[in-house]
Length: 394
Image (cartoon, rainbow, N blue to C red):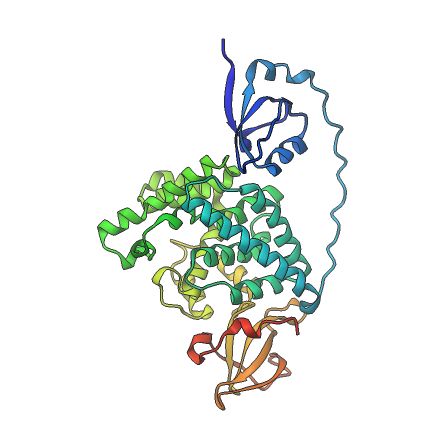
């Protein structure tokens, strides 16, 4: 009796016997046969671009004879050293560039009907998390300023970094954190194949175009499957999009109950960026107006308590947002003094009253020590400015 079975790399477990590699990324053939003795063996296969293998179940039944890997001694977590914006800037920018390149590669592979490299994103997520630990605002600021507002890649990256900055509000488990951020980077995969007229929010489309647009969710799940799969919670988050758009209330409720806090945080960050960046035809609104919208739609659509915790974590004006002060100065939120979001640090470089560039300087807004206040959250396009040219570690 043939006991060979195809298994995606995400379903491969310790104790399986790999007969051969059946699906991989890249042109260099990967030859692999033998027992999977530990998690490192699976990670090594992922690193080589393997996305599917054929296992021999008859040998798998003898897995208890495989020498067990030595027990891993739990080490206390190493406390990450906090860095200033200036000291973190180069590392954060490098992480941003690597992530952007990986996302551009994914877009091209999706368009050309090729499997994508999910493992590469998992590795980058570790770099993202380390950067946000060293400085909570730097990578968030860079991503907000450098990404294209109305682009799938830009939206996916911004949501991912927002989740990296807020994940601890709902989970501290490493596997959950990876799944959550992966979902941000992968949840709109199917949209790369949509015609331009369908890359708009539902309320901007007629009923026929809505149905055509919703096919992107099924396409996303198919791409993940063809690429060796993703962590279970990432797939479930993507499935929730599908059943929610198709008004399958029972299935949506069941998935929501399983994912609960992770799903709630994902929905908040996803909606916040769509509204504040003007994604998919939305009119861009201020961060304050975004929060007001989220609160207005709670508790039916969003968790009110979690929204308030997100506001406290990110600030009323998050890092990277451009603001105009009552004095006429214009600058972007660079971070917060002592990581206190009630005292934003603003990188000022322009005056809207004189319509002239000014000497670059930083303003710390505090109710106690500053006479100036934030008047509004504005867009660089309102003043004909290229904000990316003013992004620096200074």
